[in-house]
Length: 310
Ligand code: A3P
Image (cartoon, rainbow, N blue to C red; front, side):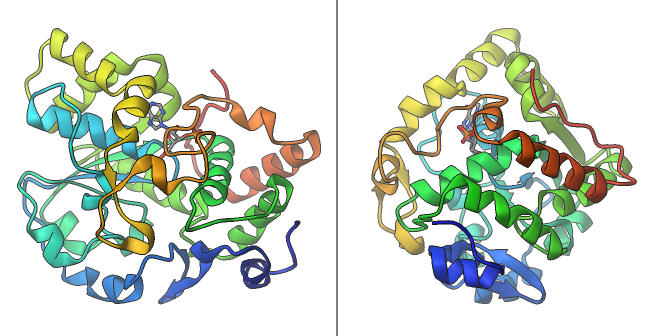
């Protein structure tokens, strides 16, 4: 199946429930139950001074960095027994977030304008994770087609056609350029509270990045612990360790559900490939040219650089 003309027709034609929800002009919110109500309540979020955040566009390494930051905070290289979704503001009600032990490592894919103001007032520490958009969109394609409850049935070519259409919605949960253009500017002006990390760089030097995160969070750490955390958070280790751990149930149900049951088959999953450059196995030459042109146009005026290969 290939895509039709508009995002909303595409939703009907392809079962893309992730684009169903809209809230105050922000399109493309994930179809999580009570999402609109949760968004409505979000401005009332009360931050604590010690809150830590992972901000990222979907599929840019959120689970990885959330795990690293949580281990750093715990001071132990031990797999975190709860899913990062428990700390995902799109997924959890304010009362549930409030009940978490402190310091909390929260996470969200919401664009800058939708971040609750108290996060900035309380000067929360923010780790901004950036990954090149070609790999991020390929990963998103597998997320949408592999996750049972999202169940996108279209092809990669069909999904690719969605990307320029997403760009037409400036305020869009799934518009990489809109997301990072704004956050990059913010990060540059707030280096005391924001640590911007790049997925491609982290893969090259995971131990160095654990250290960077620990220093940023003000947690003393020795080389041995840095190495142990990097190892426990390596793709291969997390894939194995997290496969049977609890994740959120379908449609946000609170049932315990092993990660492996959420996905269509073993080829899909939250821990799919974990590489740089998988986009080359998906983008045609023509798609790549179109994407590059779109990227140039959309990122005009931004000095953010990303690596498309390493
Ligand atoms: P791929 O689909 O390209 O493999 P998010 O956590 O933001 O949803 O991002 C998921 C992407 O990060 C997936 O990319 C996943 O494989 C990758 N990933 C998850 N854990 C990782 C790790 N420990 N190291 C490197 N990449 C990881």
